[in-house]
Image 1 (cartoon, rainbow, N blue to C red):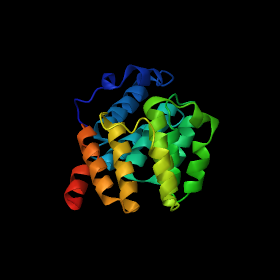
Image 2: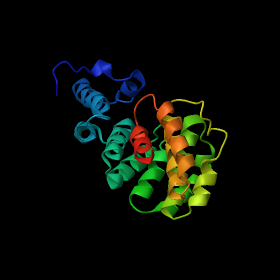
Image 3: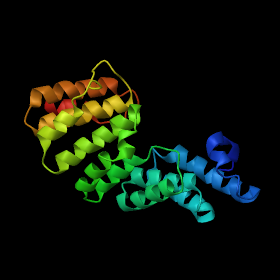
Length: 215
Protein backbone atom coordinates (compact mmCIF):
# COMPACT_ATOMS: atom_id res chain seq x y z
CA UNK A 1 0.00 0.00 0.00
CA UNK A 2 1.63 3.31 -1.07
CA UNK A 3 2.00 5.64 1.90
CA UNK A 4 0.47 8.58 0.04
CA UNK A 5 -2.88 6.86 -0.54
CA UNK A 6 -5.50 8.52 1.66
CA UNK A 7 -9.00 7.50 2.66
CA UNK A 8 -10.33 10.91 1.61
CA UNK A 9 -9.60 10.05 -2.04
CA UNK A 10 -12.59 7.71 -1.96
CA UNK A 11 -15.77 9.14 -3.47
CA UNK A 12 -17.93 10.77 -0.77
CA UNK A 13 -20.96 8.59 -1.49
CA UNK A 14 -18.83 5.47 -1.06
CA UNK A 15 -17.24 6.79 2.13
CA UNK A 16 -20.70 7.31 3.58
CA UNK A 17 -21.31 3.58 3.23
CA UNK A 18 -18.46 2.99 5.71
CA UNK A 19 -19.92 5.07 8.56
CA UNK A 20 -20.81 1.98 10.60
CA UNK A 21 -17.11 1.08 10.90
CA UNK A 22 -14.72 2.47 13.49
CA UNK A 23 -12.33 5.10 12.11
CA UNK A 24 -9.27 2.84 11.90
CA UNK A 25 -11.17 0.14 10.05
CA UNK A 26 -12.96 2.64 7.82
CA UNK A 27 -9.64 4.23 6.82
CA UNK A 28 -8.11 0.80 6.12
CA UNK A 29 -11.05 -0.23 3.96
CA UNK A 30 -11.22 3.12 2.18
CA UNK A 31 -7.52 3.10 1.26
CA UNK A 32 -7.80 -0.40 -0.20
CA UNK A 33 -10.90 0.60 -2.16
CA UNK A 34 -9.01 3.62 -3.52
CA UNK A 35 -6.20 1.35 -4.70
CA UNK A 36 -8.67 -1.12 -6.21
CA UNK A 37 -10.19 1.71 -8.23
CA UNK A 38 -6.83 3.06 -9.36
CA UNK A 39 -5.55 -0.33 -10.53
CA UNK A 40 -8.76 -1.71 -12.02
CA UNK A 41 -7.88 -1.12 -15.67
CA UNK A 42 -4.10 -1.57 -15.66
CA UNK A 43 -3.73 -4.39 -13.11
CA UNK A 44 -7.11 -5.95 -12.26
CA UNK A 45 -5.60 -8.86 -10.32
CA UNK A 46 -3.85 -6.51 -7.89
CA UNK A 47 -7.04 -4.43 -7.76
CA UNK A 48 -8.86 -7.62 -6.77
CA UNK A 49 -6.34 -8.28 -4.00
CA UNK A 50 -6.99 -4.79 -2.59
CA UNK A 51 -10.75 -5.26 -2.81
CA UNK A 52 -10.46 -8.60 -1.01
CA UNK A 53 -8.42 -6.95 1.73
CA UNK A 54 -11.26 -4.47 2.19
CA UNK A 55 -13.79 -7.31 2.25
CA UNK A 56 -11.83 -9.10 4.97
CA UNK A 57 -12.54 -6.15 7.27
CA UNK A 58 -15.95 -5.05 5.99
CA UNK A 59 -17.63 -7.99 4.29
CA UNK A 60 -21.15 -6.92 5.25
CA UNK A 61 -21.08 -3.61 3.39
CA UNK A 62 -22.61 -3.61 -0.09
CA UNK A 63 -20.13 -1.21 -1.68
CA UNK A 64 -17.22 -3.38 -0.54
CA UNK A 65 -18.71 -6.56 -1.98
CA UNK A 66 -19.48 -4.63 -5.16
CA UNK A 67 -15.82 -3.57 -5.41
CA UNK A 68 -14.70 -7.20 -5.11
CA UNK A 69 -17.22 -8.23 -7.74
CA UNK A 70 -16.16 -5.55 -10.20
CA UNK A 71 -12.47 -6.33 -9.74
CA UNK A 72 -13.14 -10.06 -10.19
CA UNK A 73 -15.16 -9.25 -13.32
CA UNK A 74 -12.26 -7.27 -14.78
CA UNK A 75 -9.94 -10.17 -13.89
CA UNK A 76 -12.14 -12.66 -15.74
CA UNK A 77 -13.00 -14.56 -12.55
CA UNK A 78 -16.63 -14.94 -13.53
CA UNK A 79 -17.71 -17.22 -10.70
CA UNK A 80 -16.33 -14.98 -7.96
CA UNK A 81 -17.64 -11.87 -9.68
CA UNK A 82 -21.09 -13.41 -9.91
CA UNK A 83 -21.13 -14.36 -6.22
CA UNK A 84 -19.92 -10.94 -5.05
CA UNK A 85 -22.19 -8.90 -7.31
CA UNK A 86 -25.19 -10.95 -6.24
CA UNK A 87 -24.22 -10.38 -2.60
CA UNK A 88 -23.90 -6.64 -3.19
CA UNK A 89 -27.33 -6.56 -4.80
CA UNK A 90 -28.88 -8.46 -1.87
CA UNK A 91 -27.27 -5.98 0.51
CA UNK A 92 -28.92 -3.08 -1.26
CA UNK A 93 -26.28 -1.80 -3.69
CA UNK A 94 -27.49 1.32 -5.46
CA UNK A 95 -25.53 0.52 -8.63
CA UNK A 96 -27.02 -1.02 -11.77
CA UNK A 97 -25.27 -4.38 -11.49
CA UNK A 98 -27.57 -6.44 -13.70
CA UNK A 99 -25.54 -6.08 -16.95
CA UNK A 100 -22.40 -7.36 -15.22
CA UNK A 101 -24.29 -10.15 -13.47
CA UNK A 102 -25.80 -11.26 -16.78
CA UNK A 103 -22.36 -11.16 -18.44
CA UNK A 104 -20.97 -13.29 -15.61
CA UNK A 105 -23.69 -15.85 -16.31
CA UNK A 106 -22.35 -15.96 -19.87
CA UNK A 107 -18.84 -16.29 -18.49
CA UNK A 108 -19.70 -19.38 -16.45
CA UNK A 109 -21.41 -20.96 -19.45
CA UNK A 110 -25.04 -20.10 -18.79
CA UNK A 111 -26.16 -17.82 -21.67
CA UNK A 112 -29.77 -18.95 -21.17
CA UNK A 113 -29.68 -17.53 -17.64
CA UNK A 114 -28.31 -14.24 -19.00
CA UNK A 115 -31.31 -14.08 -21.34
CA UNK A 116 -33.69 -14.73 -18.44
CA UNK A 117 -32.17 -11.79 -16.55
CA UNK A 118 -32.53 -9.61 -19.63
CA UNK A 119 -36.28 -10.30 -19.61
CA UNK A 120 -36.71 -9.38 -15.93
CA UNK A 121 -38.55 -6.38 -14.50
CA UNK A 122 -35.21 -5.08 -13.23
CA UNK A 123 -33.86 -5.14 -16.79
CA UNK A 124 -36.91 -3.28 -18.09
CA UNK A 125 -36.25 -0.49 -15.59
CA UNK A 126 -32.72 0.19 -16.88
CA UNK A 127 -32.10 3.34 -18.90
CA UNK A 128 -29.27 5.04 -20.79
CA UNK A 129 -25.87 3.38 -20.86
CA UNK A 130 -26.97 0.70 -18.39
CA UNK A 131 -29.70 -0.43 -20.78
CA UNK A 132 -27.25 -0.43 -23.69
CA UNK A 133 -24.71 -2.47 -21.72
CA UNK A 134 -27.38 -5.08 -21.04
CA UNK A 135 -28.33 -5.04 -24.73
CA UNK A 136 -24.71 -5.83 -25.61
CA UNK A 137 -24.65 -8.70 -23.10
CA UNK A 138 -27.97 -10.03 -24.40
CA UNK A 139 -26.68 -10.03 -27.96
CA UNK A 140 -23.57 -11.83 -26.76
CA UNK A 141 -25.71 -14.50 -25.12
CA UNK A 142 -27.59 -15.02 -28.39
CA UNK A 143 -24.26 -15.35 -30.19
CA UNK A 144 -23.09 -17.87 -27.58
CA UNK A 145 -26.12 -19.96 -28.53
CA UNK A 146 -25.34 -19.63 -32.24
CA UNK A 147 -28.29 -17.29 -32.81
CA UNK A 148 -26.35 -14.69 -34.77
CA UNK A 149 -29.26 -13.14 -36.68
CA UNK A 150 -31.13 -12.62 -33.41
CA UNK A 151 -28.01 -11.08 -31.88
CA UNK A 152 -27.76 -8.65 -34.80
CA UNK A 153 -31.43 -7.72 -34.44
CA UNK A 154 -30.96 -6.97 -30.73
CA UNK A 155 -28.11 -4.59 -31.54
CA UNK A 156 -29.98 -2.83 -34.36
CA UNK A 157 -31.47 0.10 -32.46
CA UNK A 158 -31.37 3.91 -32.79
CA UNK A 159 -28.32 3.83 -30.49
CA UNK A 160 -26.39 2.20 -33.32
CA UNK A 161 -25.46 5.67 -34.56
CA UNK A 162 -21.92 6.05 -35.95
CA UNK A 163 -21.84 9.73 -34.96
CA UNK A 164 -21.87 8.77 -31.27
CA UNK A 165 -18.66 8.47 -29.24
CA UNK A 166 -17.74 7.08 -25.85
CA UNK A 167 -17.12 3.67 -24.28
CA UNK A 168 -20.67 2.34 -24.52
CA UNK A 169 -21.01 3.28 -28.18
CA UNK A 170 -17.56 1.85 -28.91
CA UNK A 171 -18.54 -1.49 -27.36
CA UNK A 172 -21.89 -1.49 -29.15
CA UNK A 173 -20.30 -0.84 -32.55
CA UNK A 174 -17.57 -3.40 -31.85
CA UNK A 175 -20.00 -6.18 -30.94
CA UNK A 176 -22.14 -5.31 -33.96
CA UNK A 177 -19.07 -5.54 -36.19
CA UNK A 178 -18.02 -8.85 -34.63
CA UNK A 179 -21.49 -10.27 -35.19
CA UNK A 180 -21.47 -9.15 -38.82
CA UNK A 181 -18.10 -10.83 -39.25
CA UNK A 182 -19.41 -14.08 -37.76
CA UNK A 183 -22.22 -13.93 -40.33
CA UNK A 184 -19.67 -13.59 -43.14
CA UNK A 185 -20.52 -9.95 -43.88
CA UNK A 186 -16.89 -8.86 -43.88
CA UNK A 187 -17.17 -5.50 -45.67
CA UNK A 188 -19.91 -4.30 -43.33
CA UNK A 189 -17.96 -5.62 -40.35
CA UNK A 190 -14.90 -3.61 -41.37
CA UNK A 191 -17.01 -0.46 -41.63
CA UNK A 192 -18.36 -0.93 -38.10
CA UNK A 193 -14.94 -1.72 -36.67
CA UNK A 194 -13.91 1.67 -38.10
CA UNK A 195 -16.88 3.27 -36.36
CA UNK A 196 -15.91 1.48 -33.13
CA UNK A 197 -12.34 2.76 -33.36
CA UNK A 198 -13.56 6.31 -33.94
CA UNK A 199 -15.96 6.11 -30.99
CA UNK A 200 -13.36 4.54 -28.69
CA UNK A 201 -11.98 7.67 -27.05
CA UNK A 202 -10.78 5.66 -24.02
CA UNK A 203 -9.02 2.86 -25.89
CA UNK A 204 -11.13 0.06 -24.42
CA UNK A 205 -11.36 -2.09 -27.56
CA UNK A 206 -8.88 -3.56 -30.04
CA UNK A 207 -10.88 -2.20 -32.98
CA UNK A 208 -7.75 -0.78 -34.57
CA UNK A 209 -6.16 -4.24 -34.64
CA UNK A 210 -9.31 -5.76 -36.12
CA UNK A 211 -9.30 -3.12 -38.87
CA UNK A 212 -5.70 -4.04 -39.71
CA UNK A 213 -6.59 -7.73 -39.86
CA UNK A 214 -9.49 -7.15 -42.24
CA UNK A 215 -7.89 -4.50 -44.48
